[in-house]
Amino acid sequence: MAIREGKWRCPYCSTVNRGADLACSGCGATRDKDVSFFLEDAAPEVADPNLLLRAQAGADWLCQFCQTSNRPEQSQCRNCGVERGTSASRPLRDLPAAPPPPAPLPSPPGRGCARWVAVVLLLVLGLCGVVSYFSFRKTEESVRVTGFEWTRAIDVEAWRTVRGQAWEGETPSGARVLSRERRVHHTEREQTGTERVKVGVRDLGNGFFEDVYESRPVYRERPVHGSMISYEIETWVRDRTQRASGRDQSPRWPDPGLRGREREAGRHESYAALLQGRRQYRMELPQERWAALLPGQELLAVIQGGHKVLSLR
Image (tube, rainbow, N blue to C red):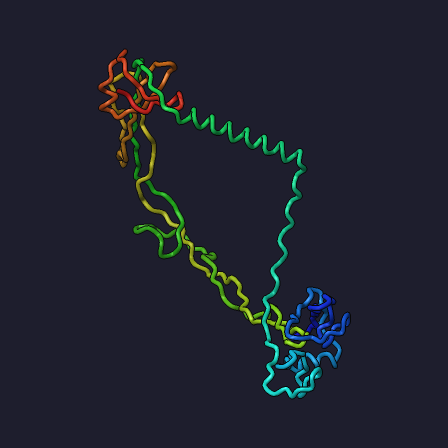
């Protein structure tokens, strides 16, 4: 694993020193317990054999009396001369890889531009408020029934032979197979190996850092084939819709004109009244309410937004 030399900042004079230095190059203070090591992004890999041996020798130990950093091979404190005894070594720390830098923020507009943006935004908000008010405002007005509309429709299906495609095992019951074709049905994820990925660095407690890697699986999408079946089958299919409409109060169903191997598939109907108030309105109604209206009848309508009739009474 790659070894890189870190740095440390003197807590007394703020000089930045090499990781291997045991004393500050600026003020001569010894490296003590208040020092933390850091690694610059562009720090090169250590190639010097002597530095590598020092990095791999182990963490420094801190004198329990004067807190001076000492190399692991030293049995006595280089500052006060006391035997190491039970003095503890600096802890090793695993540091995660730094996240990518965030995208730069766009430059803020000048004061004059920002002022205009704020004014425009306020105008837009005000306009939206006015539109919303008039769109949802409810009013009452007298209206008169001036006309009627109705529409009735019948869907017709025919029994026919149709062709289709489906995966083997999914064809409809009674289908006749015409052909089979091998195609990619789906893909499955499978592991093809592993790769070593750098996930961070380890503070070795002596001014050096070691790259930390972990093995991660590598996958690929493997195609899984199946048989695509082309088939034909007899079934009911939509053929046409017969419609009838009028502007009176005598609705009637159209003649579906059923022929052999045809059937009705559903009926649909709608009814609307034309109303004259401050303007012309059109309101869809249930058949019973629609049929009870009389031409020229005066009613009180609840209008939303000046165009939609919500109710009549």
